[in-house]
Image 1 (cartoon, rainbow, N blue to C red):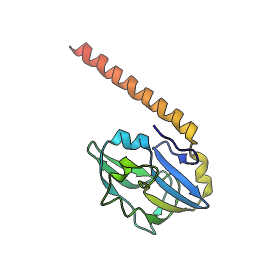
Image 2: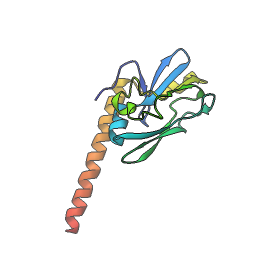
Image 3: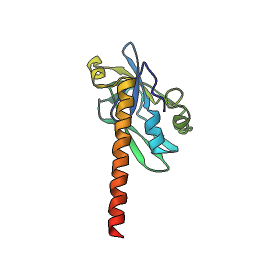
Image 4: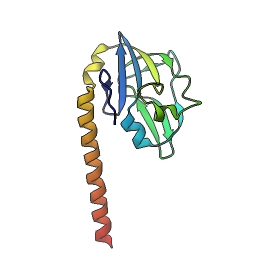
Length: 146
């Protein structure tokens, strides 16, 4: 699994590429793998304000619908017009053509809460470990019922 250096990552599995005061935002490879095949993407309008930690859109996969949370606050400068007609682009290239929105950040302090690639890789490993433990607990409960 890939976690490109130079990006920042949120606990909700979004990535941020910062260029000046512009943030390009998408969902991570881990998030898209957890979701499965993405079939629909909902994005905000250009000019709309997004608020850190609040949902700004959604992705629907064959498994579930998930909100996408803003890792930073600001005004939407641009949306990836390709995604509504080609949502699978997120599965194919989450860190490239699968970007979702570009935001003019209103508070650079928002970046302090985001993780480096190394920190995010550790976080994902921890998340996977928690999932494995839950599955083992469920299997043990099922065996007890039998």
